[in-house]
Image 1 (cartoon, one colour):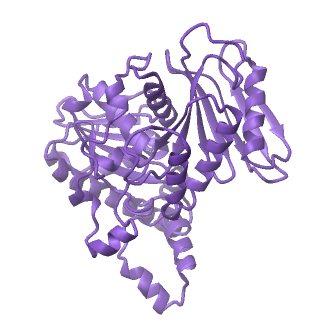
Image 2 (cartoon, one colour):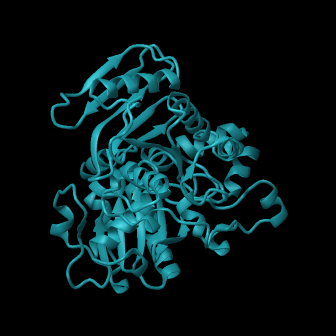
Image 3 (spheres, one colour):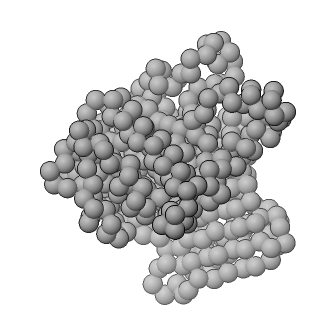
Length: 428
């Protein structure tokens, strides 16, 4: 391997799913992406790798179709595609590989360089994240095998939420039972909430420590957070990503006794109830669609089920805005992000409507305008800013990874202390 001639500034970000591997190569000097792509249907005959080199002269999108047996073969295929663009895993410009890990429990309150002990703890958390942590582990182990000399950094979805006080994190159940089985509210989408809350402060021309923000991450999975001075004090998801807002296929908040009722009266098993609440509920359960664009089209055609689904979705969203306004006491901004939050103007309009007494309002023209950038959509007179802030979880993972391994501010000017938090204020 050629010795580096300058400080490495690139981070490869990996997001390993059960049958997929998403990746982005990010240059920390300016946040640019020399390459990105996805491997889908890993382990099937119909596997597909879509690779897009984004730097000048890199050519267009390339695809591979055919069997890719496992995540190791997938990452090797990705390495080959990167090498074809002169961006291989052996590049001296690579500073680290950053991995999205869904569940870090209470131990991991910050990005962490992976070693054997860290791997063992991530594995120990599999029972509380059985769909995600196993796949995340496969990605980490595969990358470590290919580049054992390079820092592998785990960035945890739950880490941003470990600053919640016990009053927000605890469920009101027997303490001994809760502690024995790690039952508490952890929260998810943390990298998105961290990024968006900080970018919202930047949009307002203030430091994160000066701003209180309600962040609404509205995608197929949806969550809200109350962020005071850059630190999360409450969030809608709990022990699992099922709690909270109405989502594409998940119910969100529900009376726990519904599960007992379904078991006793409908004779449903625990697994059947799990599938019902996670995959056959939410917008899909209410109207058969989880695409907000399709739901709005159906509403325009007079579809009552679609209208009900939209109203239930917005009602829950409005309740959380009000609740988190009360938790924070003072709110400087409400920020919408992710697929629905960034693109569905009717959702933003409906969620804020009627909250004028709280200082919230949406300018119809600003709200309807299409833009890929962060922007304010509230009128000038509004006491609280309403913003649309595109999320960038990959950039957040890259920033945190780089700040950790280089021990300095990111080259794009983001302060290290704003990215890598210590355990102060955590629940450990």
